Structure formats: C-alpha cells, structure tokens
Image (tube, rainbow, N blue to C red; front, side):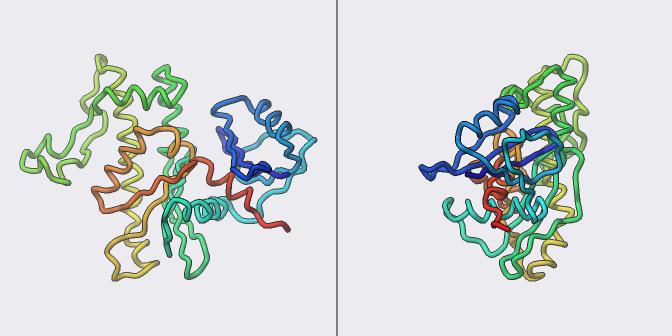
Length: 274
C-alpha cells in the first residue's frame, strides 16, 4: 500500500487510503517525524510517493518514488479530486498555497494545465512562525487563539478619513502595527500578525487581477474562486475567517476544502503509476 508524502521546509504531511476506503491524514504538526513513519509502517504502507522541496531522511523500509509533476500541479490534482465531494464543479479556479512562503497558481479545464502566477510572497508561514517565536509563542494555533480576543494595532483608512467609515475603502490598512507600543497586549499583537498575513494575500491577488482576467476571459468581471491550501489554511480558523472577509471585500471568492492543508499529500497519493 502507498501513501502520498508532502515534504515541506517545516512540516511533513501524509495521506493514504486504508482498506476501509476512507482517506487518512497525518502531519508532523501533531507528532514527531519518526512517529509519523512508525504509524505509516503500522498501517501497512510500503511505498511513498513524494512531493515538496524539503529535505528529510526516509527510513529504508519504504520504497520512494518522487512525483513527476511539479508541486503546484500535484496540489491541483488533490483539489480536483476533493472538489466534487464538496459540491463544487468548476471550469477554472485559483490556488493560494499558504506554506512557508506564499505561492499562487491558476487551473483551467480548457487547457488541463496549472499555471503558476508570477507573484511569490515571503510574508508567509515561515515569517509568521518566526515572528511568533520572537513573541515567545511556539505554536501558531496559540497565535490564532489569542488573536480572537485582540484588535490589530493598525491604522485603517477610516481612521484618517471619517467619510470612509462603513465602506470597503475604509477597511484598507494604511500602516500595519503603527499603533503598537511597549504596552500593546499580546492578543493585539497576534491579531496584527494575522491581519498582516491576510492583507498580504489579498494584495497579491489584487496585483495579479489583470493577469488572471487576461488568462481566462478579459470580459469576465467575476474572477474564479480561490482554494487556499497548505498548513495555514487548515489549522488557523481565525486567519481563515480574515481571508474570507478581506478577499470577499475585493470580490474574490475563497473556498476552504476539507483537509485543505493536505492537498499536496493527497495529490501525491493520486500520482499515476509510471
């Protein structure tokens, strides 16, 4: 039996189908790498199909085969497999890979291809994890939890122009953390981190809006839905809520699939036999 393995720079994730037929998922966010391999061995896994750009030592008891497709195409394969069971049938869509850094791509059924968009964003999961450690928070789930009771110490457009209050323009962030000082509560700092992360993703899509329109149909006003995937998409509900809110303000439509953080591992599991 085989498993798909997504080897990232921070985490390793696995997906496999036991005899019962229900796909199972596992991540080193929840257990040590050695324990993950022990679990796969106990499940009867003998073959690993790998994707991702991380570097790990895989026990010799597994036969390893790298995916032939590039990483974003593997993620797309996972999304295409899960999408129908979630009630979606789309001719084209966008993917936001919210991993160590943020990457974006577009899939069109007409061509059957996944095309990477030109923007990559270093303000990603690695940045968020690093800043969180500076705040002495090791687990990003704690950042998400604390942010729920905080308020981002940002200056918004409505703070400078009262006439924009209650409008989309008024929600624009003018300066992240501009209101922070030595007495800023940890909860507010965490809220600021999540807001900066979400705004960063939104601006990436705004900057690439014309590229997306040209690729699909210059006459189409509504852009294809966005599937956020990767660790940050599935483990931080507060960030997911911010992404839905801020992407929605700009007329983007995000869809969070079940097990969205495992789309690369699931896509690797579905890699055709060579």
